[in-house]
Amino acid sequence: MKDIKNFINGEYVTNVSGKTYEKRNPVDNSLIGTVHEAGKPEVDAAVAAAKAALKGPWGKLSVVERCAMLDAVVDEINRRFDDFLQAEIADTGKPVHLASHVDIPRGAANFKIFTDTIKNASTESFEMRTPDGKTARSYGVRVPRGVIAIICPWNLPLLLMTWKCGPALACGNTVVVKPSEDTPSTATLLGEVMNKVGLPKGVYNVVNGYGVDSAGAFLTAHPDVNGITFTGETRTGTAIMKAGADGIRPVSLELGGKNAALVFADCDFDNAIATVTRSCFENAGQVCLGTERVYVQRPIFDKFVAALKEKAETMKPGRPFDPDTKIGPLVSKKHQAKVLGMYAKAKEEGANIVFGGGIPDMPAELKDGCWVQPTIWTGLPETATVITEEIFGPCCHIQPFDTEEEVIAMVNNNRYGLATSIHTQDIGRAMRLANAIEVGLCWINSWFLRDLRTPFGGSKQSGIGREGGLHSLEFYTELRNVMVKY
Ligand code: NAD
Image 1 (tube, rainbow, N blue to C red):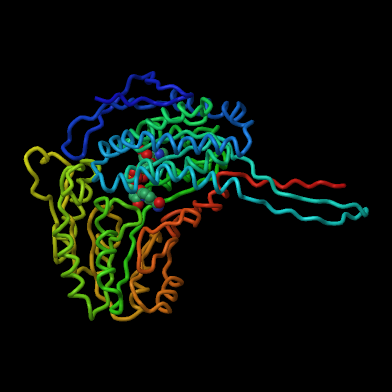
Image 2 (image 1 turned 90 degrees about the vertical axis):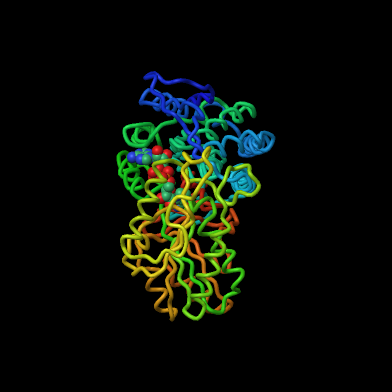
């Protein structure tokens, strides 16, 4: 049984209030451990430690020395790969092939990409003549922003946390991380890694707990936090932006989506089916970039629906380490109830259920897990709830279309603008659509293919700001201009 504490100033600490909550395994609802919920005193202590650490040895390291320490973090995560893997799988229930190929390796790689970036980032410099005949040269200096609050969701816990922690630390900031209440383990375990590589105390801190009236809200409201970076729901992002307004603290927001896949009759059919299967069902649909709206050109509509149904039928649910398992459970009972509520809504609004729509038949020992069936609907109008609202489950609605103009209008008629994928062999059409669809990320004949040097983020209500490569420096540093007269 795990005892999941807070990690403050280089030490694992319990909380003043003694408040704890149970963390259960989504596979079978068994108890994994007890989490110490941080209250105001713990958040205050974590922020104070992070603020003090800015002025300590951390602030005096050269960029190269700082990056060497973070490269050692990568090595240590890889050395303890199995500990991270077990912790992530216990918290989320995701299949081992996914956690071992995506979550943990990307979780480590997120440090390396930013140590490479910061070592090679340059700034501008200009020279000019002054009115009294002298010369002046101005140049830019990137300085750390200060104490960064990192608020994370539960779907890719280590990966999404280090996507923010990596650049924040590479840029010389200190951090206080608030993992999701549902997935506290890997962020907490990372504290051991930070101590092992000799990261100065207070540079990396973790406070566990919930959002409202708990660690999340206490952290984002804290006046000594200099920037807030958040990944999660759009509604929570709104609350966080309001919290950031007090004290004029900048926010970086990676929010919800209702992503569309567009499949044209001239596509490579097998590639389109394989890609859309992944984008709808991978990680049980709990991927912000995942597809929940599929638009298929009419000549191949029936064939596409039948082929995707065939793929959904092969998505065998099961234990994470069972080699036959293709799909894991949802993360929690709360999320299972939300997704099943959406399944019921689709039925009520008149959907044709092509596949799924409920809970799979599981063996007795797994019956208490948070399972839902992969689900495919057709036949709904574009105003239906499951077409307009984010579900964050393994499901999609498939809509036929005839023309480019028609499909662009349907895809853009949504408040979100995170990602899309376009399947066609006509490169001219693909590029026209990439310009026309209102999103931050567009894939052509692919999905979730990432080059970490490129900008990542959403438009419309899917977020503010871009992270990735040099773009992360916009948030994790302040650009100061220095003017020298000589
Ligand atoms: P959530 O918004 O419910 O919670 C995210 C985090 O915010 C949690 O740690 C939670 O405790 C905290 N929180 C909640 N209320 C808060 C408050 N008032 N103040 C401070 N912190 C608060 O999101 P979730 O359910 O954990 O994650 C799923 C959502 O995340 C989906 O909407 C998904 O699309 C989105 N997401 C987006 C991206 C992206 O890159 N755009 C990536 C992954 C997930």
